[in-house]
Each structure stands twice: as structure tokens, then as C-alpha cells.
Length: 149
Image (cartoon, rainbow, N blue to C red; front, side, top):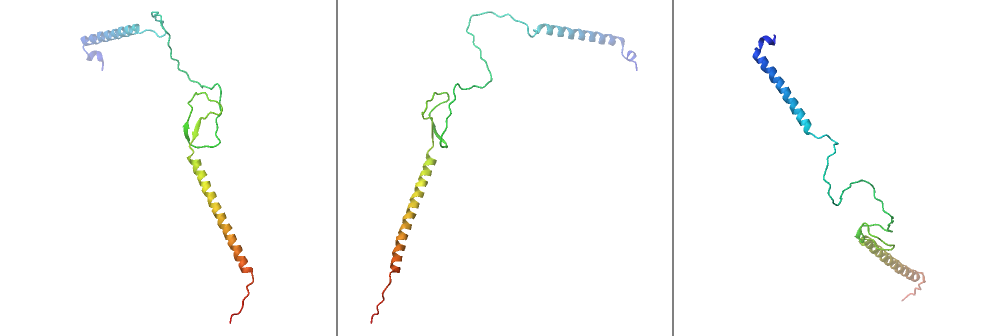
């Protein structure tokens, strides 16, 4: 089917004029919006004023101490108190932290109880040895039996 024979002439002209007007309007809109946008990288003038300069700089890196101090203990355990803060200056022999003494006090108490128990066992064995010696002496002496009439 041929569209020329199917569509009347007036309608063809109207559609053509409408298409040209839409294309022209779209071109005008694109040109005006592109003219309003500032190009990136263009220099914009600003007013100069006297003021303090403050700038926040964020960076990543590794901070290292000026001097290292090795801290160690002869025992380990849970800390009861810490007497210094990060960044404090410390001296040799200064108390830095306290370890909770309850665990070690319980070990000392258990050791004392075990020692008392062993001493009691030793005393019992000494008493048994004295008793056994007395019994031996009594049994080893000859007994004279005399007849009673």
C-alpha cells in the first residue's frame, strides 16, 4: 500500500511542518543548555580577602615512636590497674600496671595447705615409727614364765 494515496495532502504538510518545528525546538534547547553549562577546568575569579588559612589534610600512614620501650613481666595474668596513659613519659622502675593477685594468692594458700598436710603426715609417720619401735622392744625381750600353784 502506498502511503501517498492513503493520507490526504493537508495532513502530509502538517506532519512535515510539525517534524521540522520539533527538530528546530530540540536543537534550540540543546544549544541553550550547552551554553549555560560551564566547562570543567575553567578558571573563575574570586575576591581576595585577608584571613587566616585553615586547611584540613587527611592522610594515611604509619606513626612510629621516637623511642621504643620494652615492657615485660615475669608473671602473666589479668590487669587490676594501669597507672599510665598512651604517650606518657615513663622512667625505669616506675610502676606501670598491677596484675590481679587473687590467682597467685590462691596458689600460695594451696601450697601452704599442702605443706601443712605433708608436715602432719610426717608427724603421724614419726609417731607410728616410735610406736613400732616400742612394740618391737616389748616383743623382743624374753618373757619368763613362772608357774603359779
